[in-house]
Image (cartoon, rainbow, N blue to C red; front, side, top):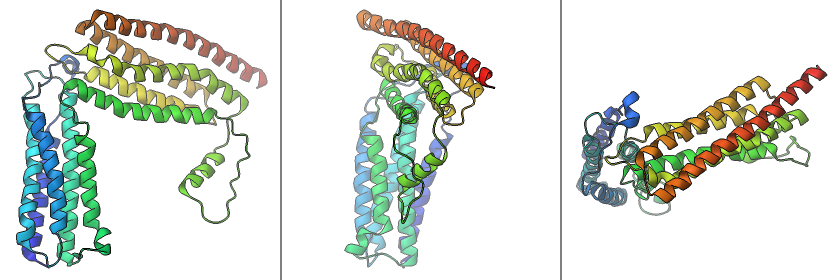
Length: 371
């Protein structure tokens, strides 16, 4: 064990952690004015500087991992440990510079949020990587090159740092609109999962469920056993779920369709999209809750409440979009397409909600008659 090597890694880890945690003190603006507040314009060249730093940081991490071999030499690892700490600190400075460019009475910036989240994830991965190197140096378990080294934890953590960098760098947003689109993509993943869950719920499995397994079962099999134990939809439950399908589907269509109109929503000077992003997130959560209420063992009162909440969230998102569209103006022909889409969606929702209410009342009357 080299005490100098351990000290070098300890200091680098602490500095990386301190830099990363500094972003946690970057509290986003809040309050009623946030939705209409101005957002920072990216200082010239700042995004290019950040992108270059991320590339350098990836190289530095790799070089440090390769230098970490016996006999462990402080002189061999210190330049790269220092460089890694410096590059993380400079990436943090880029985020702070962007946030510092915000005008007075600023609104919440999706771009600042995206940069802060990306750099924080990279910093945390780098800190964990340095901690693994530090532990290996303390215990004297530094491995030589070869088969054992390929399985060593510090090389595995090198990959985790690379993955964190790639997730952020490959789609590094440079404008507020790009950051909003990236945030929307994250919401779409959750929305898609909820919709897929709902479609699977309605699938008619013609095969008998068999919960008796001999031997080992995989994780998917275990989930299958769990789902089988929850039972299947009764005829009335299936009818209720099928009646809700069109309503739920409309909200999925609304959320999935709005990103193509985002270029129409740019204001000059640019303002926060926080109301729109929040409305999108609320709709995703409401759809997830509505799908959960439609599983076997349904409670009609709960389902009605969740569907009503979902409809309210959908209308709120459509309203937030229409309000922003009206303020932004945009190219007349494309704007007309967007306005028509929202208008037709709202009309279709009225129709489908009426059908849902009719089926809901019919099922309630049937339940009363059979009681």
